[in-house]
Length: 353
Ligand code: GLY
Image (cartoon, rainbow, N blue to C red):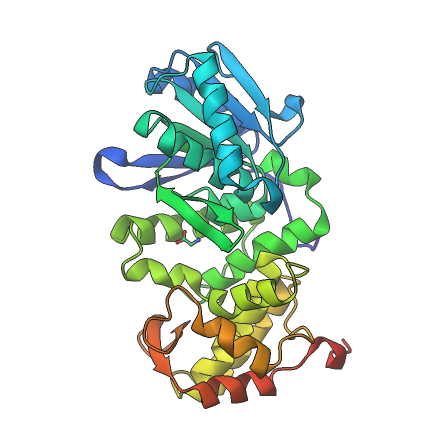
């Protein structure tokens, strides 16, 4: 943990509303908020619940209604259609109806997979997420994107299915291993450049609340990712390529940290921002203890073909880049500028501090 992992809690939880008309919901952030689950379930009027949990039983809260508990494992390996089918079969065996509720308790891979099972079961059953990692609390569990992987790639099969509520219990974070912290900080660091301002001086629960509030505002404006929501992928274009190239040795947030530094340098190379702002990218990413140098595998020759395959790259090489009017999706960036910016990045072996 770094000094910014201060988990001292305020007296009252933070509440952020994701405003989507009759599908609006609240994200509640604070110590012990998992114990609000029975109240949430009573408000939904559910008569049964299925709790799918990657956490030991003492962490998965009471529901107040007859409950089927299904153990799960966080990690990409179980993020499959086979898991979704197995979950849906258990829901059916238990007699779950679409007036009942599914609860996910785990990291982002668990909230994604259980969210998709809930989206598909009876064509849509309410789901409540209890994210237990920093990454899942600040990003994955909020906004309604659910998905599983195919052998061909990550998150290729999914649906938009907004949760009925999200309970971000910061007590879960007390047991996070160090790399899970940096994994989450990658998503907090990128918020600095997409409208959250400087979150570094704030206590952790306020950083989480501010990251969620920014995401809620963006999702409220562009639920289906047709424009504004792209900014949430700041630093992710190179980040995804680095995850792939390193065989997932780099965690998502770590790769996003390096991608954020690169996005600053590329924006400066395209004269969208000045050198001081590009330098700020490095300073912020470093502050959160994230890596800032390219792994040795990331030569321009290896990276460029992966960047061309990015989901946003419909018009040549495309990145979300900072600029005079804030971050924007910039298409058709010359390959030679991207290659030169990559070549000028420090590589892991060259970093001594
Ligand atoms: N994680 C990016 C999004 O929710 O759009």
